Image (cartoon, rainbow, N blue to C red; front, top):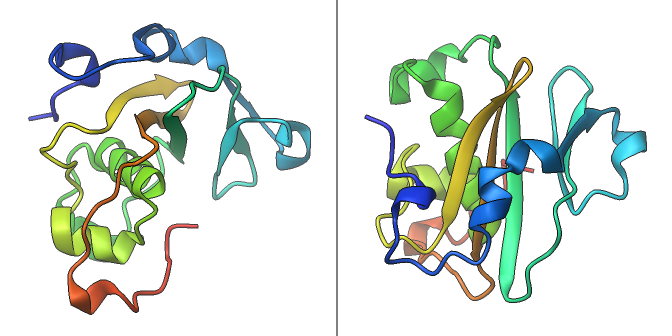
Length: 158
């Protein structure tokens, strides 16, 4: 079952529901050299890049993550997290890692490929051409507590 959509959680302050609803209009796909002016970017394994060109929102951080929809799921990750809807779950988790500035290996120990239940981040996962893209926003003060064993984790998500 997919996680609750940020657009379906009226109890959370949603400063950018229009941006999430129209996310396709704020995304560009190209080569990294052509997207240097993006607010934030996600690099793909085939050399392309996805850039976010929506307006910034004071007090909120924005992050995106993108993957090729037809890319094979790495076998070790498929065994660990399951292959069904893998890239959508992966991009959501990566987006949350970026928003919380948490290494992906630490995130896995806390949430797997899930998203936090506290509802601090809002996101939308969508299909753009041959890509799965998640756009997420979180209050600038969001932090995810890490277990002591994660303090020395190497950043694997950048």
